[in-house]
Image 1: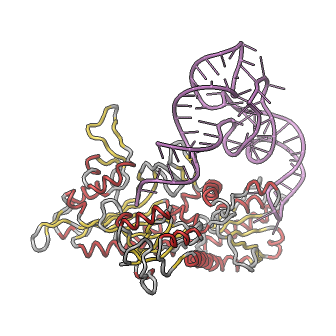
Image 2: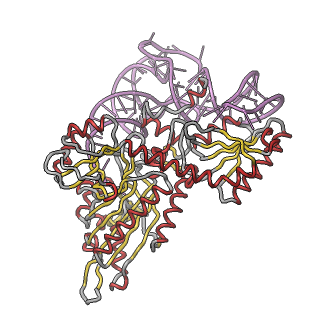
Length: 490
RNA sequence: CGGGGCGUGGCGCAGCCCGGUAGCGCGCCUGCUUUGGGAGCAGGAGGUCGCCGGUUCGAAUCCGGCCGCCCCGACCA
């Protein structure tokens, strides 16, 4: 590579992961900084990925009995203040509307940081009988949290998400819903994002403000920091009590409903980037790629161009018929090489090159965004066969990305006894991402470990993620009563 | 909120120390030649030097104040 190519390259991940992330997000045109502090503009390529995420999740929510609805952006201040832990958790980052219509408002409105309060206030209005339950609603919305420090996709002042809010007649049913959603999130992250998370319960200090219990999906990024990628909360009757969400049971008693809330956000796009990206750019898993196959025609003269251009159209159409999202890059002012770099940076899973030589042979050149060691980067394939095999090729790539991510996670996971804070810190400094250890359940220990190592308890792992033998030693002291997973987190 | 850095054509930067013509690369426009890994040549467009004030004959440059952004930390479901 010449000097030019170097200059246009990204900072390598190994040199400065944070700089790499910022550069890749902007250069792949996923998002850009906006004139509003801490708020980003999501550009078409990034928004296309989000739209595909939305579609997949929305289908899963619908398939499990949920419906979409929409609640207001503005919430009366008094609503937020009603649940004590909730207000303590969110007050510092609220944006407040005090004036409207040229006058000061009698009661300020907050721009929703999350919608539990207004939604359960409405549920209270709609529910009288146990026959009105459960209510299983979701909304796709924007929310605002005035974070002190923001990062594109990972923590922005305004972000897009979905928030599910349900109300149930029994505690068991609400708990079941909470776990069902956690499972849906996990499936989505594995099957669509190729990002395999750990799942489990949050410790008391990490749980959602106002929840009884929080569950989370925690994914490991390439810099071995954990990213909380989705949360599902069992709210108990906390909000129901504050908003008068009661119902009459079959037995004729008045009871408080049991609530759950759960969400994933545009943060997932950041997680996707940090899970699969390389020093060339983003790598988008085929199932989420707005364009799965980019066809690049290559031709010199107008005569050649006419031929390759027609072939490109033919291939794009055939791929479309085969259910593959394909497009042709027919810009003539850019050289083929420039297009290769651009689409690789954006992470299009497969590129098809069609030049005069290929057309002459009835072939196309197929290039995968990532190749296994030893595998040919570019392969000439007969045109019809390339089209026919494309879906399988994309599926294989999807599977390989998941396998690779899972291997990275396992390679960066420490299981076994950790008997001191120093040992825990040393492991993390050596590049371990997830450290399993015992924990007494004492918040003071958790705090001490955080102080010393910057690591927090990401999850109290679900059964599947627990070690074969429960650790006896406790990283921060005391007697181990459960297994936990520590990591430094975003 | 603490520490650090940066504000100069669309983007990335130099110029500032030592005051006097705003400059470079990329990008953009036009034309021709090109196109299998970031095209070449020629011509061209584009800048209230973050804002306010001060010093000076004269300020991108010196002085004071302010604002904004980025990074690290603290904080944060």
